[in-house]
Image (cartoon, rainbow over all chains, first blue to last red; front, side):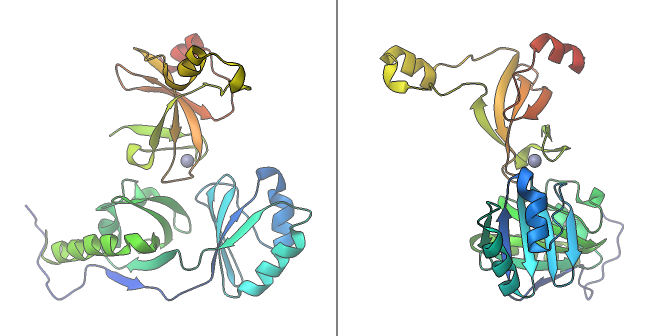
Amino acid sequence: MTTQRHDFDSAPFLIEELPWHPRFSLRVRPGNRAALAAALSLDLPTAIGQRATAAGAEVFCLGPDEWTILVDNAAPLVAASRNAYGQIPHSLVEISDREITLRISGAQALTALTTGCPRDIEAMPVGQGARTLYDSATVTLWRDDRQDFRMDVWRSFLPHVRAILDQVMVELRSGL
Amino acid sequence: MLLIHCPYCDATLPESEFAYAGEAHINRPADPSTLTDEEWRDYLFIRTNARGPHFERWRHVHGCARFFNAVRDTVSDRFLMTYKAGEARPDLTAVKEAAE
Ligand SMILES: [Zn+2]
C-alpha cells in the first residue's frame, strides 16, 4: 500500500534520446596504457567504472583493458591513434552507431533504473558509472548527478528497454 | 540471487551480471594429434563433478567482460573465493581456512 499522494500531472522522471555523438571503443594492454594515454593526450583511468572528463572528451573505464571514449571531434583522436599505432599496439574502433544513449533524469530517475538494474545504483558515486544490465540488455550507465543518468543501450535492445521504462513511467505516475 | 566478487572490478555484484563457464584449470593439450581417442574424450567431456568445493570459471559478461576463476561449494552454493584468470590454482585447505 502506498502513502504517496497521487499527482497525475508531474512526470516522475524524464527519458530523452540523446543525439548522435562520436563514440569509440579503445582496447590496450595494461602495460601500454600509460604510453597510449600520453600519445592520445587522454586520461585513461585504471579503476573499472571510473571516468575522466577533459575538454571535448569523456573517458569511461569499462574493464582492465577497455575504455569507451566520447569526443566532440573525432578526427584528432583518430590521427593520434594512427601515429601511435606502430609503437603502441592498441585497437580504437568507432562505435558511434552501436548504441543509443538515453538520458534518464528527474525526481524518480533512480527508482526507474532500479526496476531493471540488479546493481545497487544508489551506492554508485556521482561522476562514475558501470557496464551492467537493464532487464536482459547490457547497458553502460553513467551517473552524472544524483538523479541524472545516461544509459547507452545497444540499438537492437532499445525498443525492449524503452517499453519497460514507459511501463515504469505509467506505474510511477499512478502512484504504484 | 548469489552475490559474486569480481576480482577485476574488485566489487561484489549480482549474479545476473555473470555467466558460468565450466570447470577451471583444464589445459588444452599442447599437441592433440598425439592423444588417444580416450584421452581426447577425457579432455573434452570428463569433468570432476565435485560435491563440495569446485574450481570453476565465470565471466563478468555484463560488466568488465573478463573471465576469472572461483571456488564454489556445490552443496551450499557458497563462493569460497574468486581470483584472476591465469593465477595458480589455490590450495584448497588454505581456501577453506580463509573462508571460515
Ligand atoms: Zn568485473
